[in-house]
Image 1 (cartoon, one colour):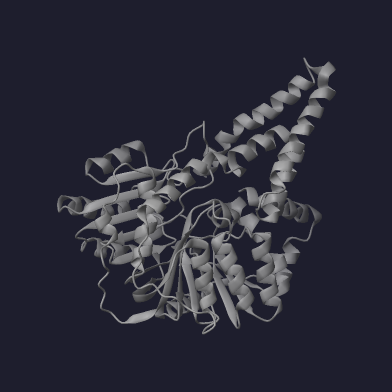
Image 2: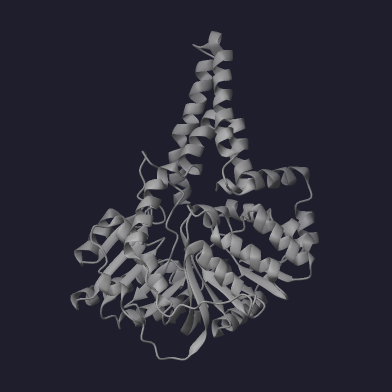
Length: 502
């Protein structure tokens, strides 16, 4: 709610500008109204010419064109603020320069041949699009709830000897945060290098400057990503990634943020279900590099080269394959969207999905429908209790078309499901920070790990089976009866048009 207020406050000036123009047109400049309206229409036409050739998801493009046609000044300013990536290009340039300076040096990466196993093609796709290789994975652990995930992190933090890298989208002081601070303070006193990244918009109204100062006072090095300002109110291109890396030996990630509700220390929307994972081995270096690139891009206190050269030295047996990557709004292809579409097209038995939000790009929506129509068991699990009612209404507007094609949709009745994962055919599991919405798939920085023939795949499957057992499956006929009036159909259509902008 608070984030919606912040976004609204930034939009107010553009709405006021549109109203001012029309009030002036029908007042002082009445004699010149036709000329001014003509100029405004030309401006709208120019914006459309700018948008049309851009390589972006079709319904995202159509949404912006409709907004600009309906309100040229408001829509144009809105596009420049939120739809245009130009203002964020310096961010991307800094990250790219940092990556080039780091000169990623992986060891023991796997070179898989899709001719031997066609499933290897997905790993080749990840490497081609993100330059992230795949590795044999060791000691992978799946955490079915946030409290298990954070207990494991806190336990591993106690073992840190050289460095701790922490990155979250949302940070909010509370019981969980204080547990982290207690450990981090002791580790800093022991000489461990602790670095902490959080996103400014994600933690807006939650993590104050006073909180930031306290973090610095205990000598935790901090970085606030993409700080908000009224001059450059960048609400897109946020750092939605979540990761913890310790000594280059173990990496944690998943959908959890650093706030009490994620560990169910407080109740907001019933039971808060989120998931996570950890693993050891050479693949941890992918996360070390992900963090290092962002840190070095915006901090003068660079990460020492020696940290990047540390060996995992894990002697545990291999347990499958993992490829970990981050998605960027500046990549030519939206990696996760492309990957999920390809997985849906090549699945043989089933594809099951966790997502808290369901604002589907046309390409992914079509891939889900095509998979279901060719007999693939496609299931999507979404929250039963929403955190944002309007957003939940957006998500529900996609359900009838999917269900008509044979997609089964479940609502997690105990509360809010914040997990993000895709499981297919007992062989692939993708777990990370990516929601199935436009912002995650196209506009934010995200991270994801894809596991193949690993025990973590079965662990995710068992958790999904249990989650479905405590969820309600949506009934298409009941949904039709609830929405059986022209007004609701119109509202759903409007939601589908504007959903890409939120």
